[in-house]
Length: 222
Image (cartoon, rainbow, N blue to C red; front, side, top):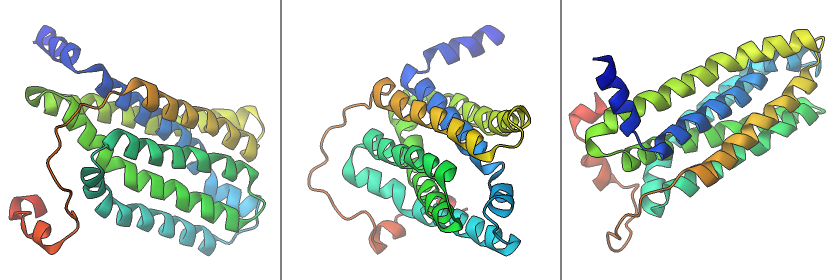
């Protein structure tokens, strides 16, 4: 049984593993900042607790809203890798602004950009996994990618706590460290993932329409 499991893992295309490590690195980068962002806002920038809640609410709502459109747009542009790359890059570019932020307004802008990137890249990345993996391995391919993503979400806060203890609660220094895995994730995606060439399906149609919504059957909504 164990040999069979390892045999399946060995058959998963390298690009799927790369996408998993990309997710892991970006999660580490994000969690290094988000773990202590509320404390940074209150203790360093003088924000109120209500302001912190408002920032987090706007950030998460933004990510949820843009997720509605990201998948269909990647279908329309027919280039999932570079669609995801652009949004990973947006997330990585937002990281230095947390370390440099002189005011709450800059943090709000950086958090907004970070969540837009996260909301848009998720669907194209998962669709890319499905495109790359052979049909009989699609379920197996999602497991390692999600596992590596979870490892990043777990390791990021632990690393943040360790660095805060090491550097005597220097928020900005920890935020600068977060830039490193973010840049690594973008570079790894650019050079390590090969998107399958898909035949042209003719003239492009607007994917966001009532007609397409009607094609989504009840099992999809459940």
